[in-house]
Image (cartoon, rainbow, N blue to C red):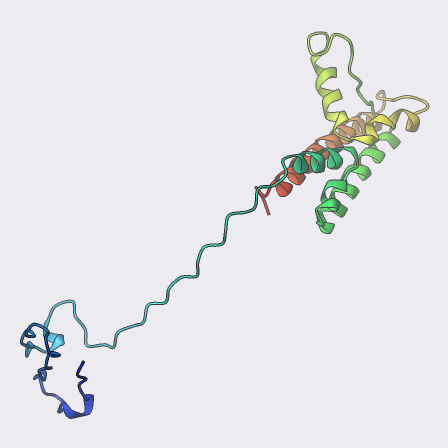
Length: 189
């Protein structure tokens, strides 16, 4: 293919030199002698090279469906353990301090730890919901009876606050277990 030397075109000239077609090729169309600035929407600015986007990353490998459940159960059983297994040190410390701190403070204030009764939700809905919230503390719920040798004392305001702190610790630990499950199943980073 013949090339045009850009230095051979005089500046300010609107003429475009004709380029000869290679042998055997059909005859080339004549070049227009219209400057590019006179065509609406066309500029004489140099063309910009388009850079191709990098290829998309491959889809994640199929994961073991048992791993997220095991991480969630361990996060529930021992506050912070699920995040520790995932290598999330910051979240491990936050959940460990929050859940254990609130739970032990509630127990020290002699708050009431609710336990499931035979009738379940129908016999006493508040006791049932309280026991579900308290069970969220995981292992701390099951050993709480050893912390309260004298039993709960909700006749004082401190005992009432302790009951609320224990329930809050359980709810936070449930949320920590859900967070660990979502991180392990790659739904959240």
